[in-house]
Length: 428
Image 1 (cartoon, rainbow, N blue to C red):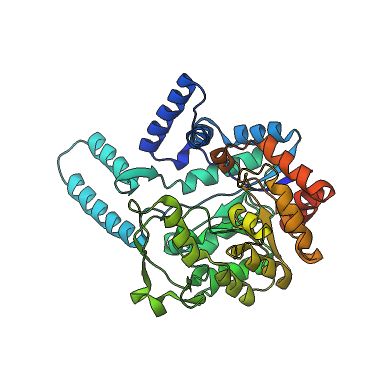
Image 2 (cartoon, helix red, strand yellow):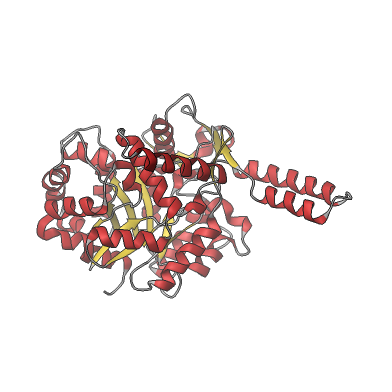
């Protein structure tokens, strides 16, 4: 049975109220005026429409229709708690909120009015440049994915996401949250980590917790799979500066070093920031510093049996360059080495869309990259879609699957079934 090792079932709970309203307006206008000329606008409209109008079950069924067969989905959660506000800013905000509420509650205002104000504080707008973007939908994502897991227990295997900087928010720390939600008999099968949201892969809670068992130690011992973003393209936090505990990649040295050794008090002040620099440059800077493969190699050197999926295999942009012998494509080469060097390192080919107007881009990747991999590395390559991110690139599940089947031929079953079953440790 086909397994999609990397997808997302984000609902409108992820979007803040203002963005939901704006998105709905865009979708209504696009439907009113018909197909939009701009591929970029059309893709963005499809992306927003999917998230606004559909439940996780709707999304699964849409993918199933496109794939033309029953399949297994691995939807990945994303903890965006500190994407637009730092833990320090959150603490200051909480202090101000408590003080304001204390003053209000000591007044003679009606209980109904006080409750309304308190609710408004509770849904504090997380913003970049004053623009309301994402809600902190941590609890809602857990509920959504738990529900679809209960509806489709043998078809959906969600991965849980949590930010190590939130450790003090939970009794027993985030490891207690992981133990609560993740495991063979739990709603979530594995973990999803996205360190470019503002933390190091070697954050002490994850890597070397002196107070208790670390997350990696627990996952290695209990064979819990972890998927991490591993591409220079993608998403990140949007703060101009943030405090980082643990190692970061330092380009001038070409290696990972403790953040506090090169940044005063471990506070990174970024060179590329919204709005003067475009989105891609902002995210690349943070992805490079906080998520470089050399930092993950350090993790694996300490936990060599950790089961980890270095998702995207460097990303389609770098992979296509790598397949054409472009030496600037460094990210995939790091992952190739880790596939050979560590027994439980995997990677997925997700969000692979057309490059350089070449409709045969996947065949290029298959012939010039995949075929040259070692047998060991080939046994750890997985098919993934990154649905519904694909909508941004005007790529349907049907077209996406066809591109892979045509390119990989008889090897497609290996990457879409055999290898992924081993990573997930499931029987189908």
